[in-house]
Image 1 (cartoon, each protein chain N blue to C red):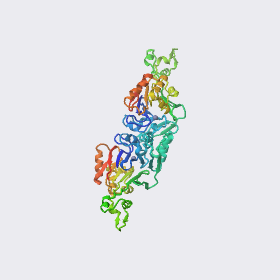
Image 2: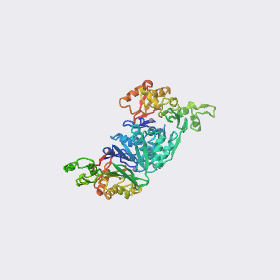
Image 3: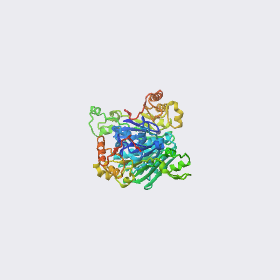
Image 4: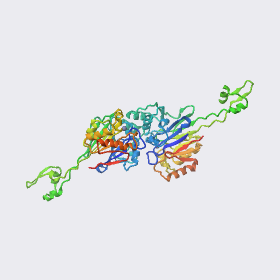
Length: 307
Length: 307
Ligand SMILES: [Zn+2]
Ligand SMILES: [Zn+2]
């Protein structure tokens, strides 16, 4: 599991940072990539990575500002052109369907895979299967903007086969029951408790990726105990007034959210193009004063998320 | 007057060629730039040039395929963000208005300049002022695709003041009449013919830029005596069947159009990404066998158009 940043700028593209997109790579876990936002030229950025558009299984749009969605029609088309034929689901605020449908219809783009668009209606779970669940909650931006909490389910521990064999117990239907944690009584009256023969479960990871937002409680809630929190930091701490006026966060506000959420790690992104070169170290230090385990995203930087 | 190519590829972006856009730079002539097509990431390409989005006065869309329009919403938004406040007109086939309006509305992009969208309805003149006229004609593509003939008006020759002074004629309202080519009778009965006192006019230039198309008569007509014809050459000569099937042209077909039109110069663009590196020289030679004065466009290549 890795987060690969494809665009880490704010508002308009600059030479150093493209507009927003981040790929949550779940290749080991499910052979898939989940994309978060899709600013213009996201498909161009992808050309410079090993990411294959056909691998993209889901695209989560945080909000409908152009710097987060204008790359979507092109990517959807190219995914088809490049042979992608597996289903793709786009999640986003109300309006995302009209944008996708009109863009594809006007351009007569006929994608050759099942394309689903899910418009989010308020806070709550928007996806769940045996492996992952995704929860969305509305943040504090000028327009409807969502954060996403991606929760990997725990992987049950392995059956301790050697320990059973030491007790002289032979493989059979019994093993499955024990693995499921059930209590089993043998013919000779011996009682076996599943939990004694099952190793510790592998804890699932939690990744929280927020859209543009002021510091807000919903963001903190989504990030509770997250292994990684990806938070916007459009402005330096000293520009808090502007951050407030434009519904964005400062470095320190992002760090406060990570701290209050007891997140393990914070990655700052969506950095205004007013900051360049040496500024980045300063922005990072501002956040680290509040939350030590902070890093900054750059285009093409990849962060491994270990268990 | 220059043509600056911003994207010279076909269908999908590649590392070497972005999707289609070309800027006709009329900085000396009218302090403006006219853009032809606006594929995704055109604004990103512009970042690597000296072109200023606020200078863009008109955008001519040839057809609505995604590789020609998906950069439009982002560019329109960024032009405003970067302080562009002069009017901008977008011309294109029916459907371009819906695409622009829905994209800007969904993304709540409020441009701070007067934005006009003109949907072309069949062949004919779509713009004219004292300096330029633009004529559109429908080409032969799978969907409605237009070519544009940009005609610079002749600049009248200068009044030959010295010649008049040699004849003892003093400056006055008379001069203006002569400059306009009128015939004037002096009080002493001398008859002066304007054309004798006016230098030769500076011939205006003709630039023809075609959208995606098979070889077609409309293209030849638009390119008649053009100083420069920009013609797509998606395929090599040997791939004529594919060119036909996909409503595109080969190198040789583009060259034939230039030849039949008596154009002075041909620039090939919209090159399929199947051709790379050494192929380009071969493609160029194929065209030159038919029309010697052929060049090939590359991203960021600029062609001066002399009078
Ligand atoms: Zn943004
Ligand atoms: Zn095309």
